Amino acid sequence: MLGINGPEFILLLIIGVLVIGPSRLPEYTQKLANLVKEVRRMASGAREQIKEEVGIDIDEVDWKKYDPRQYDPRRIIKDALLDDDTKPVSAGAPAVAATAAVAAADAKPKAPARIIERLAEGEPAPFDTEAT
Image (cartoon, rainbow, N blue to C red; front, top):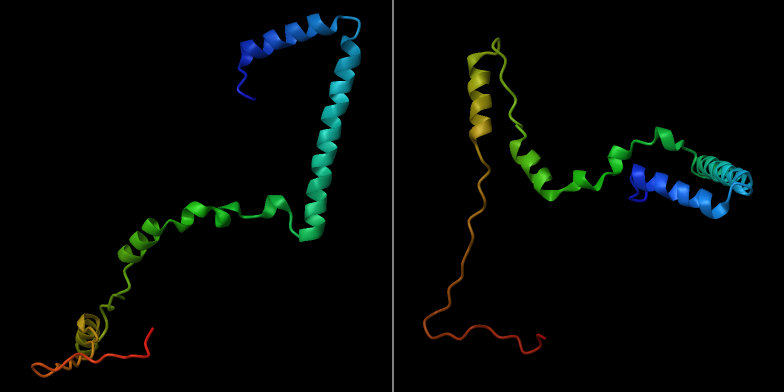
């Protein structure tokens, strides 16, 4: 509570009682109780207003969905690398299907060969005069 521990709070209460005095103490405790009630009423009113305008109850919101720590790029990459996309072949599958599944899993699509055009010896590189 505002960085105040138990003994400090008790000391503040004693100082408050001495400063206010015993004659005005009941009046100030009543004012404090009314202030606490008013703050609680305002908080519940704000909660009801949010529920009315947004259409959801604050207690029903899944706050874990909105936690920014779940979008840590390191965790996302780690999860993607550890994710196993290969499906196991069932024991009752025919041998041909099993070997085809293994071959399909091992086969990687090949990238098309790059065509590199070389300039002739002594030929200047093309230059675009209109380029900016």
